[in-house]
Amino acid sequence: MHSSTWKSLLVLGLTQLVAESAAAPTSCPQPRVKPGRAIYITSNEQQNSIIALPIGANGLLSGGTLTSTGGSGSSILEQNGNVKAPAVSDVLSSQSAVTVVDNYLFAVNAGSNTVSMFAIDPLNPTKLTMVGKPAAVPGDFPVTVGASAKNKLICVGATGAKSGVSCAPFSSKGLGQMDQLRPVGLNQTTPPVGPPNTIAQVFFSEDEKTVYASVKGDPATNTTGTLGVFAVEQPCDGRGAVAVSQEGKLNHLDETVVLFGATNLKGSSNIIAADAAFGAVMLSVDTASGAASVKNVVDIAGQKATCWAVLSPETNTVFLSDAGADRLVEVSSTDGSIKSVSNLGTNDPGFNDLKAAGSFIYALSPGNTTVGPAVTVFDVVSKKVAQHYQLKGSFATSKVQGVGLLV
Ligand SMILES: *[C@@H]1O[C@H](CO)[C@@H](O)[C@H](O)[C@H]1NC(C)=O
Ligand SMILES: *[C@@H]1O[C@H](CO)[C@@H](O)[C@H](O)[C@H]1NC(C)=O
Ligand SMILES: *[C@@H]1O[C@H](CO)[C@@H](O)[C@H](O)[C@H]1NC(C)=O
Image (cartoon, rainbow, N blue to C red):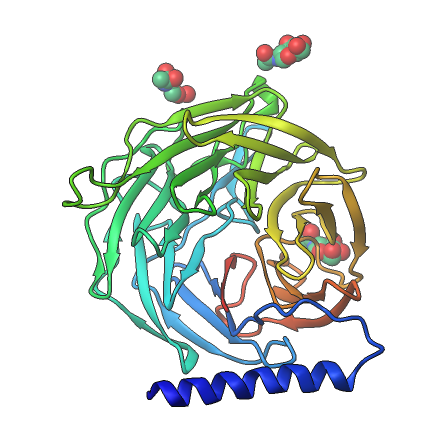
């Protein structure tokens, strides 16, 4: 495109902005944040698939596509007395079973120990094309994947008998070889018995210079939550590949119990992480040493299992979802204090993963044996449910897990 064309488009954009704000002089200006374009969920069935749903200009969802991952889903086991049985919902007990960066999507296959990579068609974001073949994870039961566009790296958390964090480079041709597992202090089986004592999430820091792994402790054995911190190392001679350090720091955080999904906060190395035992914590991380500590404990009254966290770009606050409650809790990204509690009234038994874009939260309810899975679109400004989109089809069972989002 000619630079003069760019300029006239730019001018056109500016004129529109001015015209819109002039047309509505009495309304409060809302920050302009990019709306979402599509969300992605794994079916986590035996033949795992990605359910892709387009987001309209109004932020609402409509019917989309189903694309096979070429791998298998699975379920953790839950122990009731002496009986171990596959979990009915929240079957991976993780955040980020599917992750999007740039126009790429990554999804874990817990039952086949692989991770799949797809290219997203930017003109038609529910059209996914697999890139290369699913990559073998050198661990068992991968449940979460973090990705860095800057470093062209992914890191996967495997939480079965062979557990830890394994990373691999990616390119437009596909995934490279996954590297040696970084242990996170677990001693599990395949499938793992959880939710306690399993990996919750692996994700990159906001500046993408650090990889975090949040690991659940176990109240039954007084094991605390752990945050693993691994540095991304640039090659010192400018040659060779960027890689994630094998030498991480495992921070055992005494104030935490069932440390779960987390979100980075803007412009700091602080994190807000859910804790299924009581609510959430705000963590501060010294990325130079890898040391993490608890800054604030957020007790959420009446919570059942607060497990997922997302930062809304519209409000710069964090929304937490609960596996056992039909509500969202909003906390401050400055100190973790509770800003609002929204009872959604959707009759969902609870949520698992969630994402934010524009002025909306997209929260996935897996349902249960009697209530079907659904995505609630929640307006963070009005604090109202904008849409309750029910997933229908043979792929839509309570095994659905993970929410990825393209902006
Ligand atoms: C791991 O768990 C198994 C079975 O519970 C036990 O026999 C083994 O000693 C444990 N290993 C470690 C390193 O704790
Ligand atoms: C856990 O800690 C509590 C309080 O310190 C103690 O009473 C209990 O025996 C401990 N349980 C285990 C399994 O170590
Ligand atoms: C499923 O969820 C609904 C709504 O929360 C609840 O009323 C129902 O008892 C649940 N069913 C089972 C079998 O747990």
